[in-house]
Length: 94
Image (tube, rainbow, N blue to C red; front, side, top):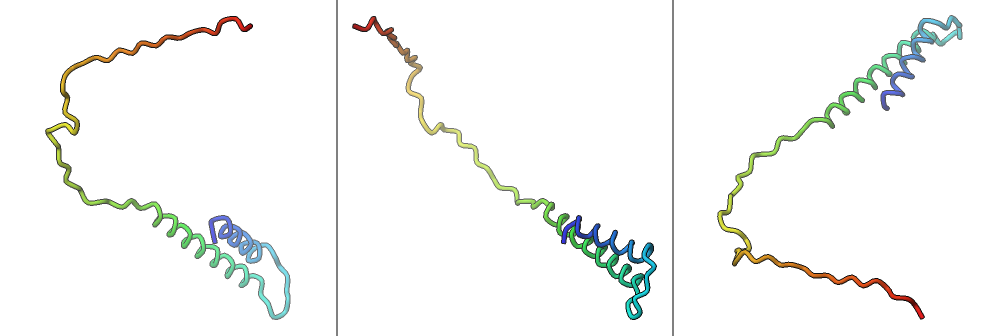
């Protein structure tokens, strides 16, 4: 139902239970108001329960990690590679 729908039912039930004084013969509006308020409270509790259950964290088991002493790619020597780049500007077009 959601929080908004639950609060709407609670408010509508409170209006019927406490503010409306109309007689419809076979229908008691104060009872209808109380039923709507109870339905709103039940919907609010169920919604909050499901929201709370989604936010629980799952604890994963601790995994063992191995530290490898050797490098994956062996280093042969410490050579430095230099890059030479020549940039030519365009000359005049003919």
